[in-house]
Length: 537
Image: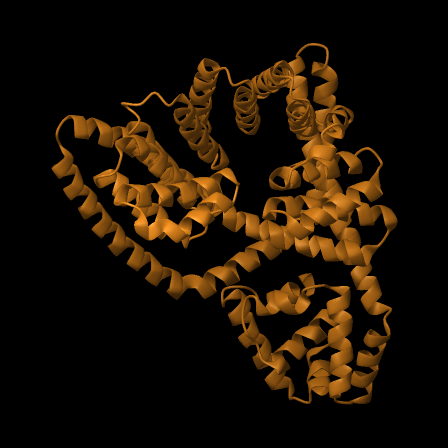
């Protein structure tokens, strides 16, 4: 970077080829320095690519495709990145640069892996591995084995995952790079964590801890947190959870919240538990939305992967013009569809959010109901009997039954924890000075003052974090309506009591409830459901 910076003074004296090569090197050096590209870099990357496509040195075209792909990868357009990497491989037909060919395969495999398109990802990683064997680059071979292990792990093929983890470790050992060897051993911890073998996972992670790099620290911190929380080192696990909450992805933050719920439950700190249950729900909602986006990305990635092969065949058959016409027609049709979908989204957004919130409420209430807990406990009992019958006859079936039993036990445990939180909040409410003040005012026929409302608002949002935001994220409401929600959440108040405290008539309060009922839950639910909804927050 320093050298290229010093060259800037002589740019005007450069010929056209040298100037474009300089611009390509500016992209290349940032990639080598692991600097993330931004949307602003796409203009430069595609200008360079366009030059080498049209009249530049053809031997540099694959690199131009690669770095254009890296830019769109970093700004989140995985399907386009895959397409550019594929075109980069096509452009290498006349070159013997095994290193770049391997990198293009590796990067394509990694993007497909991240989107959950596992079968093609395996093929690309294996091709990269083949090329690295020819190059005799044992370090890159180890990384290929590692990524194959991760891909099989996420795809649920545990035997293959374990096999490739072991190959990665052996390959790193052969390279005589002690840090790489420790890294590959640490990577195997993910297999042990998913298998519930926390002692082995801890041993794998221990030696690599001093060498964890900035770009991969969150995944390793996540594994360390899980291991610590499951081996009695709660304070150490707590510190990793806090780091994940500060800098992690949505998924790692959700994991941190789940672990912190367990941490504070052990201490009996119900307010803290309530805080992280709320955060866990928020991150779960975010994950649902991300998963929906990822499904689209996966479809697009699969589409691009297949369309690339179709397009290649059609080009060879001399049907480029027909394909281009169909592509243009398809884009036009897609544009019409997108406009229509956007119109539908705008018109239905409010009703959809209300319905999702209501479904979430029903699901939450059903999960913590006595009937649901009793049903799951009966299933656990039956699975325990089946396990007893099959443990000596069918190891595979026993393992599957054990996994089902453990999952049900976790769900029952979470349901009990949520019931404990609900009961504790209810007890705290009923025994609080705020509850007594509100009920005394209603009995005396006194309208609550501004300072009273501030005290109530502060108390409720400290006891139930995100209470206000939980309402306002669905719909903006007036201060009077928000105060009505506060009274509903305090509980134990009839409609006439609420009217007295708000300084309104009984009819006005009933009308406000109906209005809020329709705004939050629609008009097709029972009259009582809005109060249930507010009480559930």
